[in-house]
Amino acid sequence: MFENFIAILKEELVPALGCTEPIAIAYAASKAREVLGEFPEKITVECSGNIIKNVKGVTVPTTNNLKGIDISAILGVVGGNASKKLEVLSEVKDEHIEKTKELAESGICEVKHIKNVENLYINVILKAKEHDASVTISNGHTNIVKIMKDGMIILENNDSVVQESKIDKSNLNIKNIYEFANTVDVNLLKDVLNKQIEYNTKIAEEGLKNKYGANVGESLLKYYGSDVKILAKAYAAAGSDARMSGCTLPVVINSGSGNQGITVSIPIIVYAQHLNVGMEKLYRALTLSNLIAIHQKKGLGKLSAYCGAVSAACGAGAGIAYLHGESFEIITRTITNTIANVSGIVCDGAKPSCAAKIASSVDAAIMGYHMAINGNTFACGEGLVKEDIEETIDSICKMGKDGMKETDIEIINLMIS
Image (tube, rainbow, N blue to C red):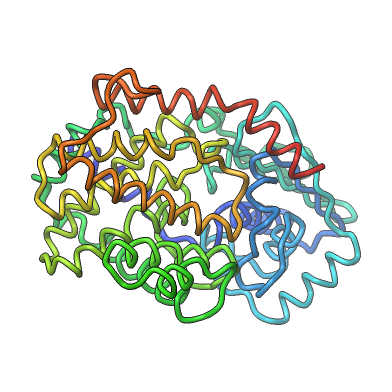
């Protein structure tokens, strides 16, 4: 079972350059260009409402200030390297950006909203004079389920439409995760966790050093001080400030999201420095945090109307409690207090205000921890809180995945109208 947990972390905690939805479009487009074998005369991007929602307001990385599905696709064709997957745009140069602007103005790219597909769905179609090629992604940001050229299927993976990962996550629960975090040989996780610490810290520092988005992180430090509780929120928010506004630094993601990767890690890194704990304790706290977030997203799905910062902050709160040497009971109460508070935050797309939602979610997690150590926990029967932590998580996931479906549709309709 625990070998499975190591595999889950290694699969989920991977580097990505820029917000993962525009990057997924760029990846599909770059791969389609590779299959086509020549430069296209026409690009068509067919995608789900959730992809539209998460690309509309975010800066495409490496472009300074360009946004949009068309920019993402064109840049993937012009300067993308599909072999780098979520770092597909890492080799983009100034001339690629200028060419992308020209092609966007020429109307080379058409965008279509496709309904009744998976929440995470992208199909990029390229056409030249005599040839065409298409690449379809579903359920995962790099999960190619079909490749076609000139009407012939080159690759088709129907199983992957249902589940991107073949790694079994059925044993993920808070008790097992806690036991794993306590007993795993951290040497087996050093590489992936060191990269998360390094990459996510760098982008958080960059977000505080320079102007990005609405500068949420900077505002927190300027007006609220430098207490560790503020630092944890500010650094996490600053990482999102930079990421949502085109910073070219990579992030180690969680559950397919850079913002969630920042949220599960940065508050714990800040607290670890403040408490002066050793690296082993930090590794174990990050292991706990990452897996708790993944556990919740397993029930919520990759994209929905439920803000992923909340599930990620639950992990961060649990990790902060772990750093303080708290019991399993305090950790579960911290999670309960967090999701009972901010589970109503909606996802209206990737954009600069994600930084503020991260700050609010981390604040709720820290407050939830302090409530727990003071003997206070929201009780069973109060809203969606149940007797058992797994039942509480399950009720929140059902609300987020099933109950908020209509909310998600309305958000998408309002954003694209």
